[in-house]
Length: 104
Image (tube, rainbow, N blue to C red; front, side):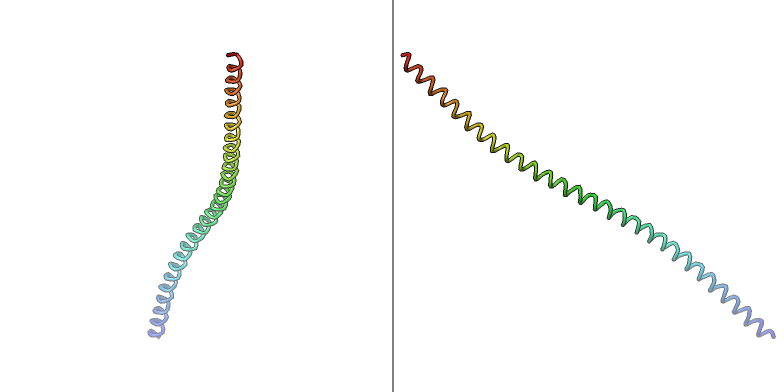
């Protein structure tokens, strides 16, 4: 009888210890699960920001290409206008010399 009671007490103590260990394991796993959810949330947020930044970068590169094209067009137009101005100045000088020769 005493041996049975001792076995029951030992089993009961073992079950209580195991129960405590299981509760600690559950607490630990719950904490890890919560941390994993937080990390997952941060990863999702970072991915969304990455998509936004990639889109912004693409738009910026497109704007840069357009701006460079405009600059090249303006350089070509500027060169053309300088050439025209140079030709006009030459004609004016030539006309002035011709006029001076005629009056001399």
